[in-house]
Length: 288
Image (cartoon, rainbow, N blue to C red):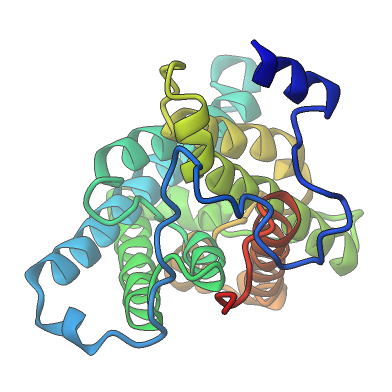
């Protein structure tokens, strides 16, 4: 009881606010969780491991299914004369968020369930995976997205080409700056949620709470789509934007395409820095 009273008095924070940025705020040796060691920048041994390629295949299939279901939902809404007869924007948002929830749940134990180059980039900056694995994941995610959008076009080419192909574009009435800002903030929300939901310290502290990590991640995707579909169609996933743009392949899909790479990567980097340096105060290098 005495320890609990001390936590209450100190605001559940036993560590001095004078601690320098980038040092370990959880630096005591008696913590009840283990921080995973930083991943090496290059890990050549991975290239000889079947689990490395299995993880890449899982990312390919997951991103393929993600694009297939989500773009097909967009096409279903687009073809209807009356939005009341379809799932509408809310349904599109649920489609994206629900698929991320399901696919992260299915692939988290194999590849980590990234399904998004921005998520992979953020986790790489936090040294959760090697550069070798990060690049491989991004390539497989982009290939999966292209194939997923391609299958939708193959099913109904006229509808697909006549309704924008699910490609991301900055909507009329918004500037490129608006679109970039929406992508930065939206991706920040997603990647920050990923870090929080998979945090080793949270898992140890809240071990009595049956939290399912894919649930808040999928819900974050849903909420971001509700907010930003009217602005950019919601990218927050460069592979999703690239796959739709390549298969649709009209000039309007490429005019603002840079936004859907620059925005998510900036948002992911900011989320990684915020979580690692501010929230967790994990050191940049080991203390001697």
